[in-house]
Image (cartoon, rainbow, N blue to C red; front, side):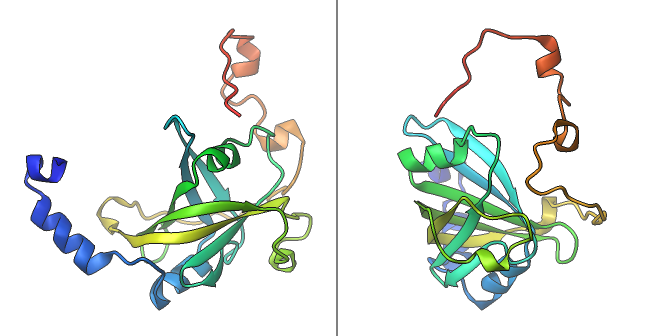
Length: 189
């Protein structure tokens, strides 16, 4: 409806014809395997959205086959917003961006399932054992054009995977705890 209202219908048809697949092709698979991060978008049953970052060494997103990928879920803050949303609404969007080399992105829209044991743990950093996995059946895969992606330079740093040390994790960076209780109930899971 909006494509008609804004006069983009023909441009959108061309994009879907030329750029959108229902699986990952060879170039997309290679791209996924070298990514170190992905933005994961989910929504609960009421449509309330959440977007979260997942990261790891290149290959942390496992391509199981051209139409199926998996990524690990590690111990986090206990909120489980992403997994809670997936349990209510299995539709997810993944955005993978290469900020440093090709400066290009890949969208993957998929239907996700939470899996407790996928037997892929051997490929992950020491000290980081996934608690569970998200397996996603690819519904759409398409390019995110580079015209608005900034080129960035990687910065070396030592990561403290799995730490509970408050200071190492960023502490009260935004001053929420220091400001005291707000009285708002933000729990969603």
